[in-house]
Image (cartoon, rainbow, N blue to C red; front, top):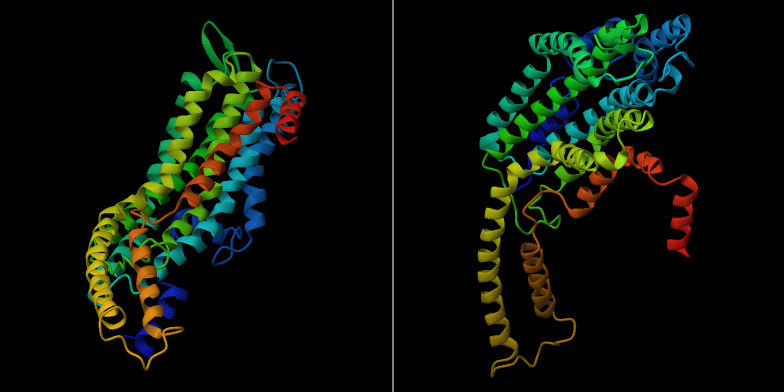
Length: 403
């Protein structure tokens, strides 16, 4: 049954209107961006945010280390030789900002597809809209962002005083038996720059939590999942494509940890090989950030497959009996041509539909999506290979494998 013109118009309005789902367009920080002209609705001036925000975190550190003589020397780890700082402020921070319009577009499309494909039946639309409204209230929460802000301004100094600081003299601190003493650049780093980055990261984790909650609520609705849908995911295959929007967020988190490990390796504290377990675990956790909420739909998908196998099996058995009675029984029709006959084509179509049901996946993503996520999560750690195998030796091994 086709949706009415009014319903179609309502769907379009919901997709394009102000009340549409978005994990990005809201909250105090977004409003601050609008007031300071770092953004224009919905998410324009991206280049301005990607330049200004990292500059506020990184340039004061450069200026202070130049004044203190720690930019290029004077300590074991000068500022301009600190890979960890580059990874955090010049790679990860711009990527977290870049991810905003990408995630906005992808998640908006995923939510709209629930409605467009008829997966949410008409009687569940009030609950569907209630879930969207609830997610938007959380996204706009002033309290939530204030808690995040308070957390980072308390957490950042504590972390750098208790374990994250390198146990050697660096541009941000000197280390002696009495503990860690911050330089002036270190004071800005610990109390301003690091909290800025941590706030952006925690804000992304909060958005992911909203996304998880929303998809959990979707999975509790009585959805119209069709086992014979050609996407082999009951019509939910579009959700697998939705994870691509989060790839910059995954890469950014990996880049931060990769930079942290690189700083330990280059100062001789540990080797890259010693971090292999931590790296593997982190890759697993990064991929899980976007795939776990997909697993909320596994029970519905498995139930739809079981039901589809039963119903299509019964339908196929009935059709095959009638086909055999007509074409293989004693009264074979002589007035109908067998070649090109619609009965034969229908039998093939029935087999194809049964194959689609049998091949239906229990998750709304395929192996291709999983592999691509793993590659993106692992990519920031590839430079660490050069600390174990020299570049010339690595290139030689690659050439030998190819040739």
